[in-house]
Length: 182
Image 1 (cartoon, rainbow, N blue to C red):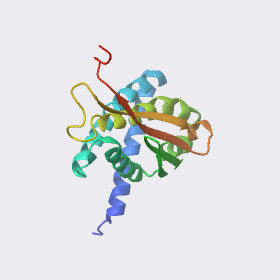
Image 2 (cartoon, one colour):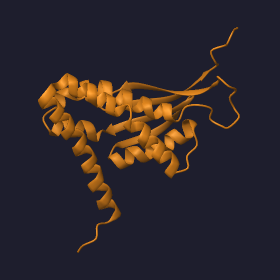
Image 3 (tube, rainbow, N blue to C red):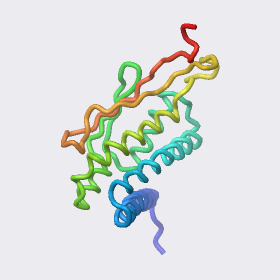
């Protein structure tokens, strides 16, 4: 029996992961329609990124905050087959995606016209959940009760809209607790 390389094993699981995501969506869509499938897809993508972020955070012993998020996203994007680069920004970092495997799959399956609609919801939810998993005080003891640092997520460009890249930004948002000004 021929042994698979680590790269082949990774590719096998990546393809299985993307296939099951698309298959379950299409089966729900066949039975309940596109809107219901998209609603359920959103519910899934509100949970899965939490699991993924926590898993990578633990496996890689990553800190909270922007530093840990950037490292975890770098691994996630590479594992999923994105062509991307990361650039520092004031108060955070940007992810410039040059090729999105999810958009490519939708185009290849003849559903490219739905890519923007799905991305509008799912990419926003997914990346916002990743940001929330790394939010909070960036270093132990830095924040008092009710205070901390949140990581915000913004999109400036999107391949699914016909632009040449996606521009995702993860930025630190300082805030004070609910008793500010009292």
